Image (tube, rainbow, N blue to C red):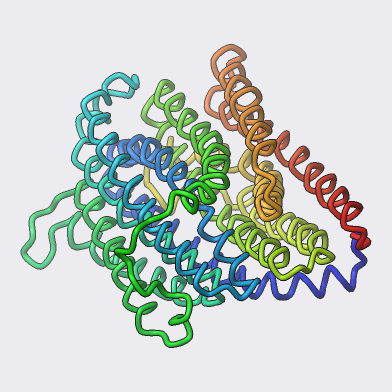
Length: 453
């Protein structure tokens, strides 16, 4: 294991990179969080409908985002090796991949709109979900384009620009929600659909803003593509997909489990589904801290490999893991002791508040586990280990979490709390195995290189 001075030495640059990424990630979640807060004011049925629509959208969004993870890893590695033209090529190919995948997925989601009745959701939820669902699914294209630019900007050492743009768009989203939901400035009151329109608009503004910032920064000029329409090379797509497909699998298994949990909540009724949306919005916001740390850890480990600094890998990874666990402990205590107060900020419905508070107690337990597993996964991605972590993630969520949650909820009578307890068990399984895997891989790599890792 690395000694304490080495851990501290490597942790500082990791946190310097991670903090703007974390704030940027929180800003993205804040769009969904503010949507939930404002939708909750117009009723529990619209809130439940947004939960159902977002559970399907998030499934495809996370999988698509995973496919693009090769951009940050490969740009970081090229940047560490001072290969500016390689950085530009990975950006160009990443944007082509994002637009292609995004278009295909949006068309698929529009087709799914004709089959929403097959998910067994309450009739009152289905009556309100369609316009919001179509609008929010369309926003996938600008989201993916922004993510490619964001990963590039962070990987070449400029994480603050995406952060600032996202923070500004959170404020824009709140303003547009207020305008479109309730019909201010002479516009019609669109209700739930207005919230979707606000989010779509804010996401388009974000990608335009970051594009213009990057094109006008002289310090980025060396890494910026000279010709966007130059022929594309399949070898570069293959490099990105070798990282992206397993990453998409990992994130798909996790987000799919939470989407399936939302569907199971719908089987239990409108109140459980609305409570699930509140608890998940809170847990997702807290999750942005270890997720941002995980992304920074991946990039720092990848950059260290590109620069030939293999002796720093374990210090970077284990320092981030310890920091994630300590950080999530604070969120766990907040959820455990302030659950009712937090839930009351989303809705006035007493039944929803009571159940949300119970789910937040379970969320407090799995916060620690969630932080550990996502940082472990990111550290492994940085050293190029993606296949075994994908298998671990599949087992954790689809063999442990979902069957366990279904058994607890529907066979043992635990109801909504049972669904979330199953998710916690899956997260614990993933956290232990991914942490062990990183220890094993870096120890083996150190022995092979003979550098005392």
